[in-house]
Image (cartoon, rainbow, N blue to C red; front, side, top):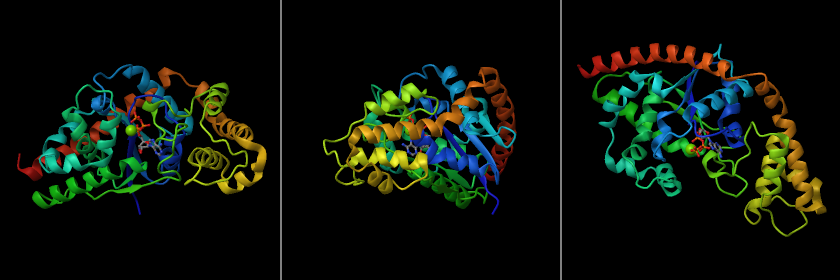
Length: 320
Ligand code: ATP
Ligand code: MG
């Protein structure tokens, strides 16, 4: 089947291994087979904080991360919310298709509110999943490679698409989510690995930074290493990470370490991560901000052409 793939990230900080195994690896694979759009979700930055912060810097860094993992701008349209007003305009009709009760039930929004640094919860926090429906539907996306936290949002998108089609005209496909090899990778503190929670291994981290983060990771007192996510979540998490980087089963790595203890586990993990990230670091060091800007300028123009067509179709279907 021929898909239109849409996915993206907030420019809130460097991409990390959770992104890689959650969604980026799928993107690199899918770009060879399907039409793909990757969104720099800049307007979404202000869902859980009062101001966008170092937004230009973060956008450049995000673009460099994309290029470093092997996204090819000749195959993929990389663009940003703030450059495509027609996409954002879809939010208006889409908001009319969902109830306040449905917005309040979203489990990911609830979790993000719990971790938010905002003084008060904004209207955007409750409505950004509908904005995400606009992200996915502006290009009539059919496949969305995301981590587990995004599943409720893809459901909102399906709901919006279904209701629009029923109320007006069959304009939109119902997109499917696609999860990666680690739909919810944990960070070094045991919570969801997340840019905003300071518990991540960034793709652009140096070998020394990587070693320092892993050294500080929590483990337990038992010297004999076993893979037991229920009883030993910290150790299991480090084994999972090593397994993903090495393409091996975590149980097998645990057995190999045996009585070597947390020190040996951390050494092995540090080597595995550094070897895994090395080619990305090399590619990244050959790129600069001008490369990032060029990719975004071209992508923004292409995305806008697409959005104009969809908005026109939506207006017609609604009788405007
Ligand atoms: P923030 O803390 O700023 O929200 P984040 O680390 O959650 O950052 P997002 O930009 O919100 O990253 O998410 C981008 C994509 O990466 C989404 O598809 C999300 O599901 C996926 N993702 C993020 N963190 C993880 C993780 N720990 N495991 C698997 N997938 C993840
Ligand atoms: Mg997030």
